[in-house]
Image 1 (cartoon, one colour):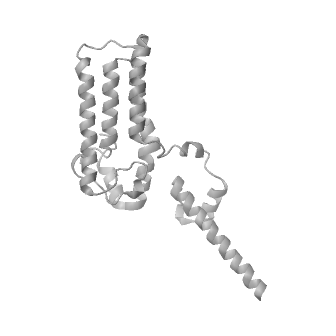
Image 2 (cartoon, one colour):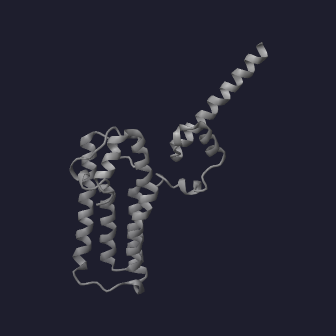
Image 3 (spheres, helix red, strand yellow):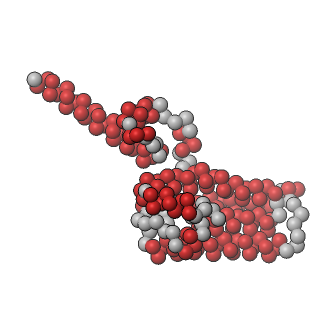
Length: 207
C-alpha cells in the first residue's frame, strides 16, 4: 500500500510540474488552447512553434530606443548616400521638422494620458497595466506614443530627402505591429477581456 501511495504521489507531482510549464509557456509565448485541452497544451510543449526564434524579439527592444536608433540611421544615410536622395519641394525644410514636432506632441499626450490614469507606460511590461486607457487621444489612436514616434521618423526622412531613409521610417510600422503592438494586444486581451476587445474594434491601431 505504501508503494502504491508513493507512485500516486509522484504522478500528481509530475502533473503539477507539467501544468506549471504549460502556464509558463502560455505567459511567455501567448499559446492559446482550444477548449482548454491540457492534452493539446502538452502536445504544444513537446512540439514548439517553429517561429520561436522570432518570438524572442517580442517586447524585447524599447520602442524609444528603436526610434532613436532609426532616427540616427536615417540621418546618417542622408549624409552618407546622397545618391539615394529624392527631389522634394523646397518647403521640405519646414515640413520635416513640423512632422517631427507634431510627433513629439502626440507622443507626449499619450504619456500624459497614461500618467493621469495611473497606469504604467513601460512598453516591455504591458501586463503591469492597471486599467484600459480609452479617453482623449486614445479615442483616436490605440497607440499614440508609437504613432508619435512614426511621425518623428517620417519627419526626419522628409528633411533628409532620401528614399532609403524613408524606407527605414516606414519599416517601423510592420516591426511594431509584429513585435510590440501584437504581443501587447494579446496580453491585454487576456488580462482585461471583453472590454479591451471591444476597444480594439472601436479604435484603430494607428490612426
